[in-house]
Amino acid sequence: MNRRRQISLTAHRPNLGIWQQLVLYIASLASHLFAVPVTAQITDPARWLVQGRCADGSPPDRCQSPPAQRITDHVFYGRHDWPPPVGYCFSHSTIGLDSSFVQNFRFADGGFGGQALYINGGVVLAYKTQDAGKTNTYYFTGPNCGGTGWIMFDVNVPTARWAERLAMLGKSDDAHSCGKNYPAWTLTRRDDIAFPFIENDQPRLLTIDTIVSEHYDDRDPIAARLMERFYYGYSRGWLRWERWEKTGTPTSDLPQR
Image (cartoon, rainbow, N blue to C red):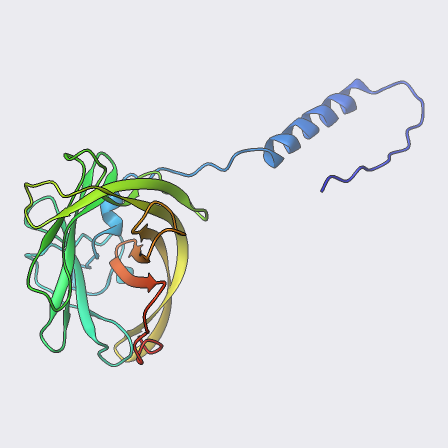
């Protein structure tokens, strides 16, 4: 809403210095009111894909600039989901044997799953996954098959607002074969999000620089049947995953999870 303010002026010889200051002030105010928010580009997206590890093996908030955990490193701490004390599964986010980033999870009953990602031209892509309780691995195709692939986020992910794009990807049992491309509406944003943790039986609430990625299985949210939401924390890797569907019955233990 624009408000008009009436100012009474008394006729006198103008002081040019004051007028010049007033013009500069108005110009400065206008530049702040109408400036387009600038989002800083991420220089190293891998920092959101891998958990950090301090030299003594403690979690990444216990030291400055913790190095990334590699899949070949000794593991000194693990992450369980809710509810405490051990949840349903534990997970790790590590650098793989090659240039990929491996994010896996394992359930108490022996079931396991996960996904592998890589960075291509500043874009984080998921290229391989295994669903929990299944033995087969399948691949997301796109970049070399007339599409984009499964886009998680890119280096231009904005802060405190959503970025939108339409991805095109396929699915194949063979890493070298193209699947049939389908549209996937994708939303990404970056925020400081508070996550509850329990460390050594002590509850903690940590605010983490987080990238949120939403993947719809059609060209827009209205047409989509389901949506998957991923949370990636700085020096934490894959922190949380959600699956939302328009139909179906939630499990009875969903509130605890």
